[in-house]
Length: 416
Image 1 (cartoon, rainbow, N blue to C red):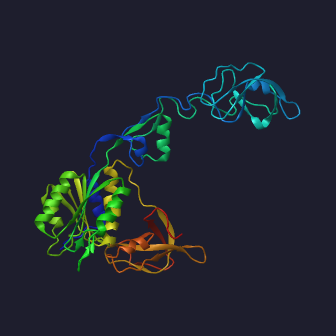
Image 2: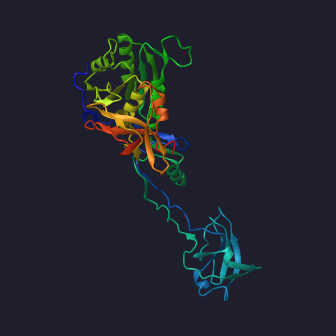
Image 3: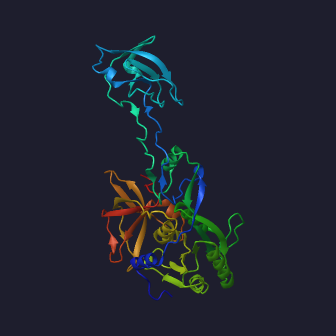
């Protein structure tokens, strides 16, 4: 039995204090395969970006002083002495009274310090009329104005996305040094769990948890390795857990953590090495049987078998640890304010998480409506829910129309 459940806060503090992130190493990643990877070192620019003064407009490169006082009634008259194409180094210079035709992105030729837009000019043969006065550097992007040589452009620990990869491409980097991705062993336990792709025997269920948890691992920055479904056999489960701990950086199991005669998981994890089990049951609903242990520095999360309980327990406890192990910033779940659409009751003495869907009422208020479910064993509970409302241990209920915070599963409300 769970003789003394930890409070939710006690369990969180225990896991946070016992987990010490280890350096898993680094590796080179091809730039096109580096999305969502974590930088292992600062990126210092080896060149100026842009590497030359460039035009930001189609028009004519000129000396700004040649256009002083120019307007529609009294244009400056210049002589077009040549043209500059994009992707080439100009071989001509701009002298007083001259203009050089130029396109967006081309190098500003020596002697010029501004570009007049083609819309502000009229040209007849080599004679150019300029109808606006320019200032120095107008319509010119200066060398190094975006990135200075020697500047730190990306910081160690940044997660690479499309913008960051674009910066690396601007620097000419074909590869980038990133942190290794944590390997997470995922396995399910129970005689009732069947492998996918096979005919479902009577009394069996398909292995829901391994696939939903593995996907959550990927979303959190880890690489799941599926160890299959292990029956409720002590020797088989011991062997599977020993192999998982030896080959992975983190282990996540589901099932086998309640009080049944074949619930061996916590006992086996505790026997694999010190410090052993740190959390054995949490005063929360759903997720009461959650167990967390450490074999050396490797965390082992043993989640409840019920799909909703398992996935919610992952979000609340395993996800922050995995993010830290991956060298990522620990990102909390996004929240929105809403009004309770129905009364929500707590489980006495336990932190309660009520799954809700979000919708607008006739007054355009965001309403959090509890999701009907068949209990924590129903996987569709989470697919119907946009998030959850958290009710503290000392609260009896949340009343109708009471303002609540909704923690979002998908970053935004799916039905709003």
